[in-house]
View (cartoon, rainbow, N blue to C red):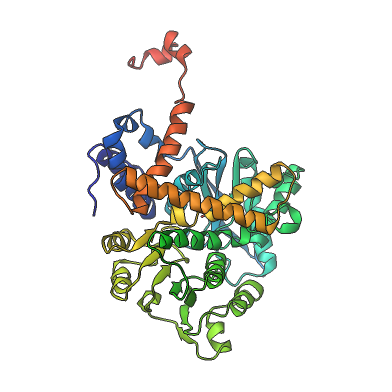
Amino acid sequence: MTVLDEKLEPIFNQVLQRNAGELEFHQAVKEVFESLGAVIAKHPSYAEGGLIERICEPERQIIFRVPWIDDTGHVQINRGFRVEFSSALGPFKGGLRFHPSVYLGIIKFLGFEQIFKNALTGMPIGGGKGGSDFDPKGRSDGEIMRFCQSFMTELYRHLGEHTDVPAGDIGVGQREIGYMFGQYKRITNRYEAGVLTGKGLTWGGSQVRTEATGYGTVFFVHEMLKTRNQGFDGKKVSVSGSGNVAIYTIEKVQELGGKVITCSDSDGYVLDEDGIDLALIKEIKEVRRGRISDYATEKTGVKYFPKGCIWDVPCQIALPSATQNELNGRDARELIKNGVIAIGEGANMPCTSDAAHLFIAAGALFGPGKAVNAGGVATSALEMQQNASRDSWSFDSTEHRLAEIMKGIHDRCRATAEEYGAPGNYVTGANIAGFIRVAEAMRALGVIWSPALRQEPCSHQALWPKR
Ligand code: GLU
């Protein structure tokens, strides 16, 4: 475990105190701080002016009640969140997550990660995240629609194409974005396409946005493999999850010649030694909104494990694409023992911090989520570009842009890691490259300050010591 720099230690303690109980947020901040010691050693000025303290404090946090009526006529109450973390580089940008595990600590960890992820893309987008503890599992289409409408009835006043632009995340896809966009349009009387991304192709969405996080993950891991003269061809790959990220990760791995043998949902995982049948997974998850256990019932030779750990399955490449902290130290040891050579975080922070340290210490290629899965938000920024110019691009040219962006992120992480004395460490590279871009913008924009107040203090201000 890395010891924090002596200038960062008190800042971290302050983060713990101010944000008591928000464990995932603490974990995300600590992971970034572990990399920043090298920056401060080289450029001590980054530790001045409250710069790092400011990055750790969201610009604005909104928590609201979401009342809605279920199919039995009962009123249900959920809690909605939007954490607008940093607008130094552009409007707040980041997804909305609907999942029962959502609380402020989850949204803050995601929002914090998003600042650096978005910075790494090189595009003009700030960082934010939102969501609700609403559980979409088992809810009818009508219930989903009424929930989304109620959620947007409060959130709309905080959004705008130049202010804050949400998108999807776990539990929020094109259907939910549609219902929310409809409600935004109804309330504001504006067809402001750039206010949400991940829209449908027929009403302002971008080609490749659906595929982008998964495709981008594979592009990034492919770049990592190339540094060791390797590729996906003929490799056994384990993917967790079966949502949007996992499905399009599997698709691209297969295109590049790899064999994906697992996928999962919150009930269990499947092992298919013949290679996952992508058409069947899409039919079950995207069309029927069914469970992964159906895959084992419908295809012969597939094993379903309602219990047990997906990471016990031997593979050369592991792509955790389900949720945070789904792969721990024990799992990392198992994967290393079984010969894993590369790990790419398709989800946000799926590896616990000890797992990440173990992979790096073992010399495996380890790509952190804020770099690896940045293809989703990068394509959201491409969607915003198309909306702003009232244009729509072809699939091929958009995918080409995505591939270039992912190569850019990869090369930036690698070069930065090298420059700061940690060659091959993508965690250090991603954290430092993202941090410097945000920090430079924050410095350029200044801290709120009114010289007039200083010259002519009113009587109330005279009560306070002069600075
Ligand atoms: N939720 C995605 C992420 O974690 C995408 C966010 C977006 O497109 O704004 O980056």
